[in-house]
Length: 287
Ligand SMILES: C[S@@+](CC[C@H](N)C(=O)[O-])C[C@H]1O[C@@H](n2cnc3c(N)ncnc32)[C@H](O)[C@@H]1O
Image (cartoon, rainbow, N blue to C red; front, side, top):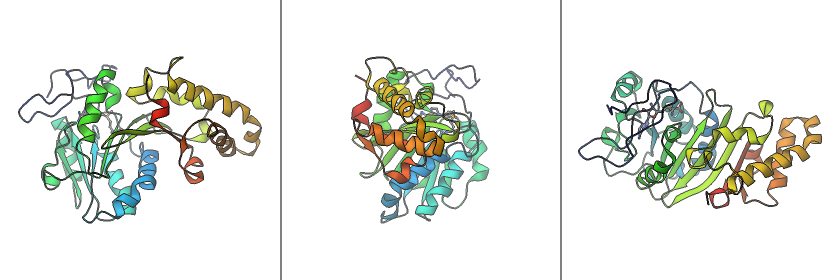
């Protein structure tokens, strides 16, 4: 599809805009399909912890979407498995804009796990009633390959498809999922930014800057709130160095406690000890 495909690993991003282009053409553009098994485990775990209660109280089997699952459907299969720990009858729809990747995923379809072609407009297709709204849309390592100016329109399209208590999780990670950053959005727009890392490998929190979602990656410059956020995390991490004698986890917990004095930090001890820190979007949104 889309002649502007950048599926060659060259670093080329998406081109062609996020607006639906008429007919049944999905909104967006084919990009590199790189993926890995278990890459998104940190994001999956956070979703289950933060959104599990909403999934559990859904009066019908909830619908979740893994948008842009890539060249192989591992992340969709794994998300379905992890969500089922919270809600066993969850239905997972893997959506890909690349028809070849949809065909490659079809052998993995099964009870409550379907695959289809679609873009940011999030068509439901055979997964259920076309008017049904998903309780979850996860788009990992998708928008990272688009121009920054296309992010708001893509967010609007996906948020516009959510159920009233639905959640969109859009973010980025490294190849093996040790460093993550994602934005959580409700139907009304962005709510929080989460950084998540394997603490044993962490040099300093600022190392996560290279994984910031597209909406923020170009904003890590002096004068922008996300720059101040990472700077304060780095300062707190340096000040917490003595706690490193007790392990990286203790140092991280001390760091999060310290920044929480000045920043609207969310999530409790159970999340922080996983190497996560979540902050209100309003505190880090681009100026
Ligand atoms: C780098 S892969 C990410 C795979 C997986 N989510 C992960 O994180 O490992 C990005 C995938 O997103 C797909 N994609 C890009 N834009 C899309 C859109 N608008 N709708 C659906 N899929 C899209 C691409 O075709 C590509 O396969």
